[in-house]
Image (cartoon, rainbow over all chains, first blue to last red; front, side):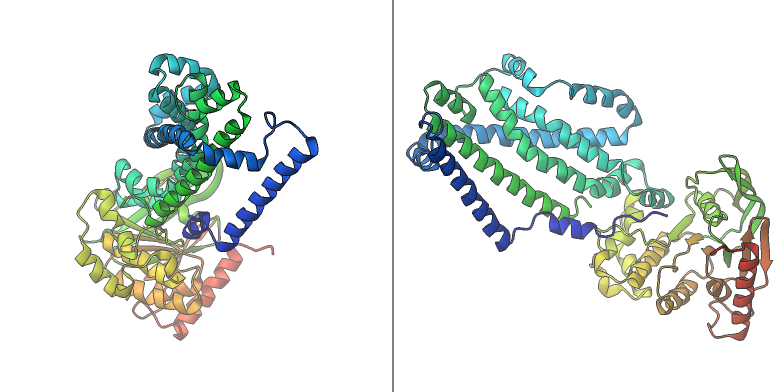
Length: 266
Length: 244
């Protein structure tokens, strides 16, 4: 008989632990990146409206902090709502697909085909349907994370160790209870993988949505700054977005680690 | 626990047309330990899975069942792998069956069962914090918790060290008394200690071996037990000439 993963808890514990050494490494590589950036500015001698240096961008971030914060909050709101909705819908879809053979036969080809459509191509349609406000950006973020969440959770749900399923069959468990007590908790690491990916993808979705049509948000601010040759402000918006994405990814990482340690439903 | 039935199986099994075993006729007496020995790949576990109602991946021709009707819902299974769920506590694991059937988990009874396997103080521990022997005791507790008249054991002690294995054999023999137990094992010593009835499965059928005298679990150092053990080993060696 094949063994279920015995080192499950260890994998979980290792997944997202920050140590002081790791923090120092992050700071060191950030400094290196800034040095390369500044070096490129000096070496090429490009004008500041083409390539602003890190000091100028830092100055812009500080000076325009109110403006950046206002637009960042809009984008963050879109990302968070899209992420939660995408995670919930993706989770439900994966469980539905794993539970029902009929659903797999009927729905999976649609899901796979839908992945052949670049989400970017849908952005104008979503703007048409959901308007210039929050709705179309949430829809973009949701769409872009739905598939990774669904597929990584679904794959994990279909890989329940067969011996656990055999044991639960001998015990006389109903399919729904076996799903709840065994298959879902055993598949949580897969769900976690999907959520970590989603944390990085969701901001991309929101920004695309803002590029296509918006009056607020970091994506809108980037276009605005670009149109007025305020390259330093554009860089500032990019950096704020990147910082948020990194923090969001780390927060989601912490959250799923706690979810895994807690061991899911009982 | 209702009165334990006897089990029987008669037939042949093939996998993709190639025979796994042929004309096996197995009788498992009620309320006793039956040990099924044989080399790997001879189909011992297949028989166990048939009784458990699990997919075997083979085609079986013949019939099998219990003396008093369908086996469905009257079987408990314990394998070499403890199959404990790593995210559940010891108590959560032994209450798994009740939860899967939608019954109210009986924590008081779970604690009594844990007492019997000597793990009451580990009730809240996770499987990863236990030793191999302790995990197998939890698996035994889960099997007892199921309270089924038929218990199927698939080499449950083979991954344990010699001392722990002997302790587990004693404990299992004590706690499963009165149930119909079918134990699949590679270990002649285990069969000689535990079997009220000992069968060696070969490619040409089943051979019955007279078990040693004495009550189960028999002492490891008993001369008769050792003689039967040696005889079983001889038989295994001649029925499946090994090519190292």
